[in-house]
Length: 327
Ligand SMILES: [Zn+2]
Image (tube, rainbow, N blue to C red):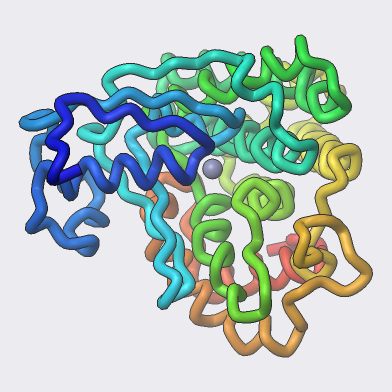
């Protein structure tokens, strides 16, 4: 890039290649900037002194084509770091559903659950706004209608998912996310030495029901989950019932998409397994450090309920064993 000196950068692919191109864009404009500098939330220097940026997504989940985020994995530390700054929002996004038609089934499942997590976390975030709310709720309705059908091969539903994930992206780029993402970022590569990653979308799919239960101790979040359940026509009289019905619905989606419910059952191929690739011993050895990293993640600040170190360890254990969140 430094040699070719482009005045436009065109990134095409799934979330990772586009995110990598965003980081390369920063390096191209400011070669002296270190990765540590890039990770300071909303701390980037002004871009577009050398190039503009166009993103064309070929998967339906991350919505990086419209967001202010880039997720970079540090393989040495085993941690995914979000770069967050409106400077890296692409100038042009091409959202062409046909590019997502060749997604394999598993990728369709994982990216789709990532998208619904974006919408739900944005809707209950402390930075929510009426503008982001409208985008998030509509994305949730579309994903409820389309994701399982898209997974089962319906291309009209696949098209709807490509738009829905983009709406969810516009929601969370404004309203930010919460601790489902903090936990997914910090567990994703934490067991890479055991032979696999916990794929981002699958991690979100497993952790989201547990975090909803944890966050619903916060009154405003509980009301907002109730609104989501109402828009999804899940029934229920009390807010508690609505929250439980929402959790049950998301777990049913995981079953229909062949996504495991917990890390203990998460196979190295991302599919449900009798014995997952992360042993109990390794998990317990690392859980304290993962919890500390998750609390420091850029997504924790906008979560409706702030977790203590002890809460985060307990939450991660619920996500490992698939046990009830009762704290
Ligand atoms: Zn995500």
